[in-house]
Image 1 (cartoon, rainbow, N blue to C red):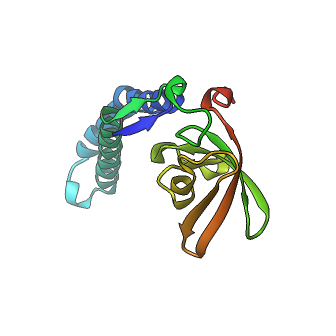
Image 2: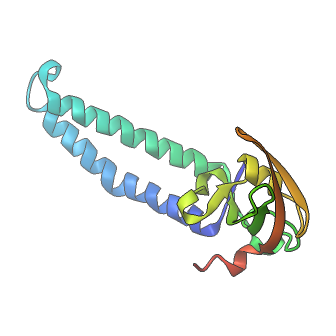
Length: 161
């Protein structure tokens, strides 16, 4: 089971609704039109329409599976004093004295450009459960990172970005 923020759950639900209600009917119509043009073995338009149909069906099934196996996180039930899902964590890499800040999210919400790392990533997993002042050790391809937790902000304080 995966846990998602309400925002991400709504985004995925909206995408699924759009694909089923708008995109797929258009894809079916395009396929029917390409099919009506004659010999399918030498019909590039038909092959392209089939490829788009398969891609759309694949995405629909993927989203259905995610939503079926996901639950929306209740931010009020999460600990505020330690790193947990949806926490925004500021930490220092002790080897380089570099400060970084990331929000810990589910793998389906990960977005490095938005400052969101997966709880299943090496750094995310190492930070989980730690308190301010504690040192987390993350095993990454380049070795072991030692990270000191500087601050933890609860999700409901950062959700309204």
